[in-house]
Length: 117
Image 1 (cartoon, rainbow, N blue to C red):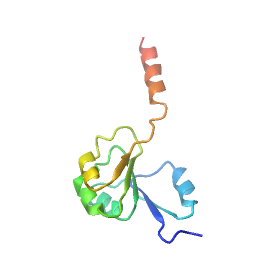
Image 2: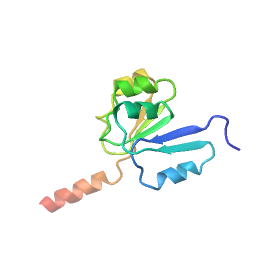
Image 3: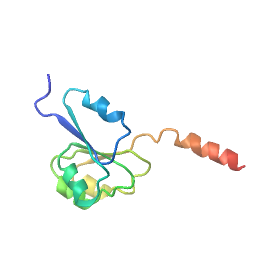
């Protein structure tokens, strides 16, 4: 049985082809995938979802949060860094910004430094 109000997850850039189908298989979750969005198109997509999944090349600024105000609850940055996201605007619009664990970034940095020596 699906909940009366499904959660919509929007991939504002192509996902890795594995996460979308997994989420879509969950009851009460709707997944929308888009080509790489920016500007007004990103704001429009954000206004149609509760969770917006972005990449570091996409600017999530005050305009995006104002366009999406009311429905958007989370922005998940699916790549390193969150300097492309206006954190003050996110807080003002009660949107939580999530940056998942960077995975093996520390190991890669250590390996690189080792090989430079």
